Image 1 (cartoon, rainbow, N blue to C red):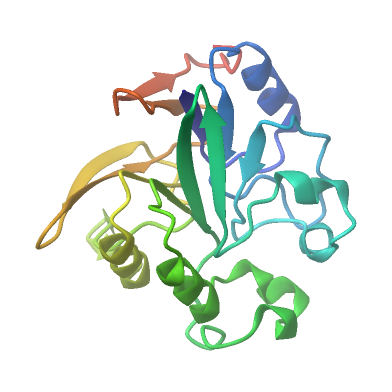
Image 2 (image 1 turned 180 degrees about the vertical axis):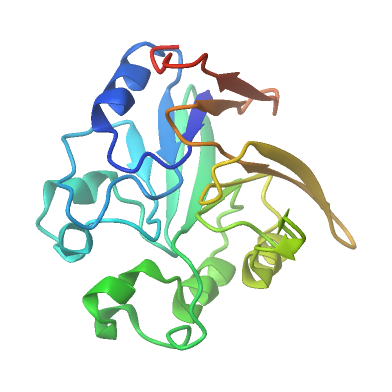
Length: 223
């Protein structure tokens, strides 16, 4: 099974459609958030495509349980089972960004624009699951994620990775392709940061465990 992971799209939906069309070898697609934006309507997406929330999304659509985009939206704290040829991979979601003020809130109680944050209740939900989570998808980076001398990563993401111990962790938000091996006391996890989705993506071969980057030439979202 081949799973493709795309970085932030920020409303460039026509480019997204081209990418999906010309890479039919990818069986499933997962996008790491900032698919759209506050004022943008989501297009119809294929049934083999899912995305987690970023910090820029159309929140009215994502909280509307009757909206068609719900079939493609992998909510925080949820785990998606992807199956092919008797092989099943579990993909868990923890999108959005951190706010100390709203960390302890309930999702249903958040002001509309504050839906961009991930929450303690969603963190706990992932820890309570006994699904053997193979892949963790977040929008934010784990700590340390250093840029110009500052750590922009989130310790909460690092803690989640250490507790779940996925085979692979994928994130976006910072728009740079990075590959790190996060070493914990009893485990090592491959963590990949993605560039803008229009600049490239990675594939994950679930049989071999090989992660392969596909970076586009300039103006070459068609691959």
